[in-house]
Length: 361
Image 1 (tube, rainbow, N blue to C red):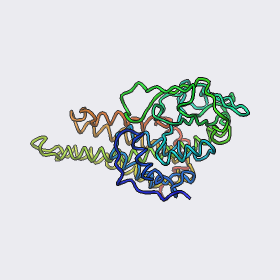
Image 2 (tube, rainbow, N blue to C red; image 1 turned 180 degrees about the vertical axis):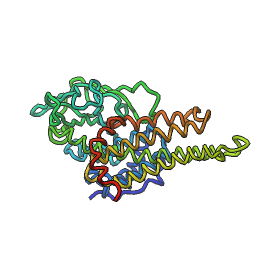
Image 3 (cartoon, rainbow, N blue to C red; image 1 turned 90 degrees about the vertical axis):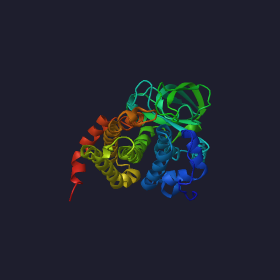
Image 4 (cartoon, rainbow, N blue to C red; image 1 turned 60 degrees about the vertical axis):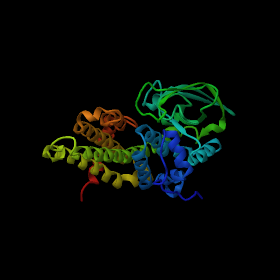
């Protein structure tokens, strides 16, 4: 039986994603994101939301991104494997190792069925070739959970997961060309004839995309929960500045137009929060893709709207180092990572009849 999960309030969260992951793991707090403290049972939406909210309150966006991907996707996928995957799972939950989820390809981007990274599965050995880009934790991971093609074609059974030690011969990691997401270890991975024992397959060959589809739904839930926490934090900080009597003869908060613009953001965040509460169990328990798409679209649109308004309301102060404009730039990840807003809106449209039938009385 897994150990009883603990809360995170008393854990000091400093440094980048790796350091914060280690602190949470040492305190046993990472398990609070899962039902019964066990990733194999799926995430607990309430526990995951509380954990992400607390991390967001103390850490930079990059560090929270580092944790979000591991909690929602990488760790639950490790729970589907055996051998090296079991060891990696235990180390991850203890906070002693970091796992990078390496899905986005250098050749095909987010079109996973066209990815060029391939694994040759032999009787006793695997040979991995290819590359991945814009991978969170790429430069700070101990192991890489790599989605690779094991046979030609776009069929969803042509792909599998491989657990690759970051120190394996033929693995190269390099940082992404960006100043954003400090602490997330975002980078590019190259695999040149990486040879591993067959036991480094995670799950059955051909189940890679099926497993990814299940967990990307959970990652979209995690993103929506995080978006709520981040937007709430930005609104609290913005209101404090608007109410500051030392900034002008008349604080901006007294202007009705400012108050209304701010209130619209409050409404938007509360709507997203309500959507998370309504759909969280459906996504976490049933991996409902339509519900996950609704959450992903809502998170992308809400974060863009709220962070842009906060940046405008803070005026010139928003351009200060680490200010609202910097936060706004990084928050764009909610509309891109895990599927761009336009793509997931198309998925919402595909399920419009069902979603509308569930709406109202």
